[in-house]
Image 1 (spheres, rainbow, N blue to C red):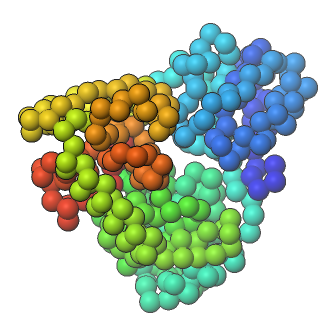
Image 2 (cartoon, rainbow, N blue to C red; image 1 turned 120 degrees about the vertical axis):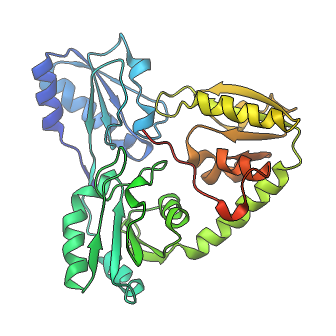
Length: 329
């Protein structure tokens, strides 16, 4: 399937083994373009009916099993590895393996890494199958490769909310294989080590330092503005993989002990439009996906903080103790 390999045969085998008659399909945004093609193949080759989830999908923390309950015999979730959660329907997690050439980006990344010996290798689910190849390349260029498993993650894997695989790794620098800046930013803030991105989607490499510096200036401004807030909304996600109600309750207590008001708001989707009615709230704390506060900060007209940023705003933690918010399973 173009840039990705989706193992349709594995789906067909699972359907036949279960004698499943109705199949649910769930794709992250980058793979939704393949949804109707996959559905057609399943229906033609098994006779099963297919229901495609049209809702946004943010990761393995956002499986549509509850929505699909009593509708499907099997849900196929694409592009992510499973989390240790209980699902309402049987779920087949199917990885989408990236297929394009990584060498142009890796070769450029090697220039950035020339002064470093011990390299921590990190990537996301779609590229885990490339780790052995990348390890060989680095070793042939005189590098020592260091990798580790995390809590709920595979070796060398990071999630948008879980950087446990890189904790305390004895390395000089990290090489991240993938696109975007959020994961490399998390690696940088979690380790304070140099982080080089090998972006095979754009055939380029880059150092994350300038982006990290710019992002931290933005976060400092958001935290500073939130210090003036008298009324906070503490947002909790109803998605089972993101739901941290106990954390929200503890944050509400902390806010109230400071003489401020706090209200817990339970939401499935979190968007600026859905927060418009709460005009009296001065700032929000996100206990759902950490990417909402970091990646989407500029689309909200009020400060959107992570739990750790709230503690800084309330002088419960120092700025130089800043850490990325994580959801550990």
